[in-house]
Length: 95
Length: 485
Image (cartoon, helix red, strand yellow):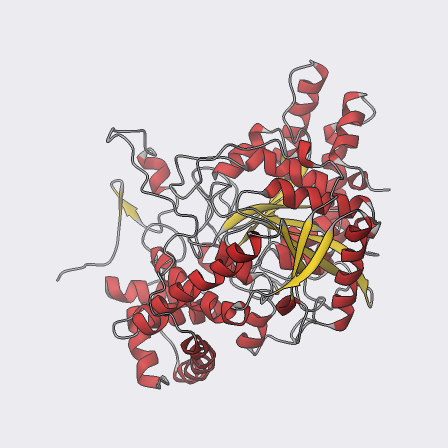
């Protein structure tokens, strides 16, 4: 498998990133080199091997469903780039 | 002589005998930082006023005879991906250049409860992605042993601050070697605990199945003290392990008679600098003379670890870093036309090149049509890599090898080649994938640069790791070597 400039454009859109054409070209080359190296894993026979989802066999962590203290609204808003009436302000989502 | 050449126990004796005050310790830190840090670049933010107030408060506490915390009065630095309430936390990223956390990480709270003094926040590779600290978006850190060389990464500031005598101890984080490799390059002790031993609540997530916080110190005993203070279950981190925490100090017996050491041939083979290998063999001789036995073993899947790691860690990073969207905190692009544009422009402006590269790699590996070929395949490879360790630990107590294949390299020498840079972590990454604990301790100099000995233990057996490291250290002088600054 090798990836193309179009793939990079598609993935950039998924990742919500913008790149210049030069950056796109460089990323295509670098990602190809890294993925080519990753092809090495195809040498491994992994039939019947369980994927590791958690390295130390932790089971689900449950607790009672009870309300606990959360941060006060002023603290939640303390780093907001823009806020209005205790809410995060963003450009219009719908026209 | 620097006060920081004393052990924690010696400093505590002096404090108790009133030969020393916490204020003097903190004064020394800020004095050394003022003299040296312009050259080193370890600190991104100083906490001077609050640190001095804390020192005064602790001296009052000492005078009044109140009980003292385990890390009483010790000046500490914290890696800048660990949140500190009211103290700027940037992850060395422009994205968070003005971010002031509104709560403390669990480890931050534990350091405070143990009466340590926070000096400030330490430089790193942006979002902990890198092995040289050249990916800091503020400035690179320089190695105190040779200012033309990198300190390693991503906890480069954490290692350099200890090596340069700026902080008594520091906290770092390790995802694929980010505590051990810089400890090796800077000639200090760096411990990556078992995955889950230390709470990650308040650690800005990079790769959640791998990230772990640990101490960087001048000696092994101090490493045990800091670990004792920060280890333990935390209901705020659902991956934190609910295990009993042993007394790590009592493990430091100096006795390694009968210890069975495994030395993986893959860690001593091609690609490992002969000068590094020579130091490791000399260290094994020291342990042998103390009554341990060692044999060569194989960890046959070692060569697959780097590929496995970069697929898994980048995939997890692409998901974790989705939260940096310019809405709730951090960089926000001006005049974005729509919400989608706001995401695109804020992220493109705020993240540096390596972070973008890894987000792209991870997004690709998780994207429709490629998930099985890359992500799932890597998760299966991880199982095989972990089994290598399980197999060896059936017959051996500990695994020993180098921490890194070479000593510190020159700034700029690998920056254009991400793949070569990734291969510096070839001896630390398998350990991270297996989730087991490992320490890097200084084992001498090669061409004037520090070499690190990596001691790897079974899951949650930090006691044996520390015992072996301590026995080795106490029978050598390497940890007393200092850079000339």
